[in-house]
Length: 227
Image (tube, rainbow, N blue to C red; front, side, top):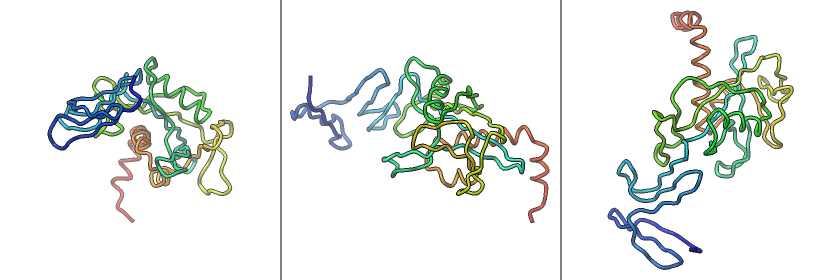
């Protein structure tokens, strides 16, 4: 078994240059396979040369807890996690990769319980699965591949206001994993604070769902002149 493998492109032309245990080898395609998926380096399906990751079964699941205050403020539940590849403590959506033997629903339920202590079953939001990075990830939404968005509606009476963060709340009974508080923030604040791109499909789809359910009110807002 090889102890060391490294590889990189020679330039714009194939073959590629690879080193296996320090010995140079010319190849046109390299791939690493596991039960989780395949990592390829070479000519991708779109004709581009570089890295391409294809996950077994396609993608994962993310969950957006949400609530609406008596004043009509939409609140979005966001985790604060320590992610060194994002600079340290950052706001992130609940979610994770789908195991090969799981459905996206099972992934959503597993991840939200592990990360945020949510035992309620998540409901999938309408819309196609999303590709988390179209440059490096291969996912065909027509096959159900990609990241699926789920929701957990929360009665406002289940929330407790934070003293040190006006307008923000925590759930009175959920127990997130240590060091990762789940805070319900106004959607405007959540959208400004969160660098996790996978949070945004869930936020938008929850908002669209609420707008659709209150379409009459939306029309009234759109037809009123600005102040």
